Image (cartoon, rainbow, N blue to C red; front, side, top):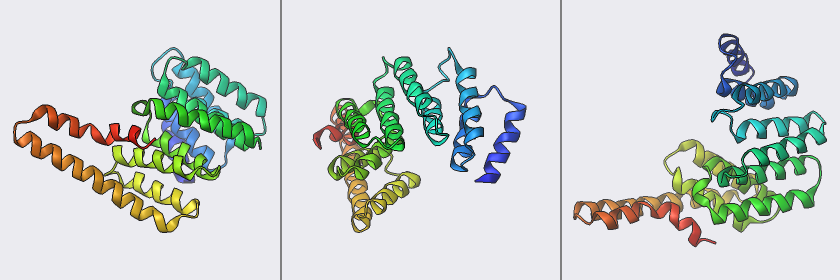
Length: 232
């Protein structure tokens, strides 16, 4: 991981105005516990991306969590508040805001406030699942497991798998989260059942398309995402 950070730092010397590279460097520095470098990178990403579509929730999230690690709680909370204002019209981003708010409060030892933000993230996700990425869903699921809401965590992970069922990294993350929650015996069977469900839906959609029933076929292909609402 340290080598990856050094390689990214070299790339930044050639193109320091790249939001994605600054964000990537910040993420690597954070994982390496180089919080000073992480803070600089996330702040630079926000400055470079200001006023453009390139600036997203991830830069704010990285900076807020870095501020927690650096022992600057006021700045961490201010960053979350700025993130909420900037993306107030973006439903998917608001789920990310609630997630980061929960993570920040958890890092500061405020369990009740963390749970409140987690519930907000789950509620928004239930109302608009189509706006949320699989990665954010898995992060919210991790908080749910940690806070004792395993049912909500399973629904979130089922969503992530249904929409990224062929992605090995997603499957590994889901398995890790079950292991982390002390549910190792359930993880692989959960993945297998969800992947099998998606495969069966897709197969039915293909059969309908082959029979010329295109409208019905399209509805079947939309089922993996739409089915998420049925689990709540």
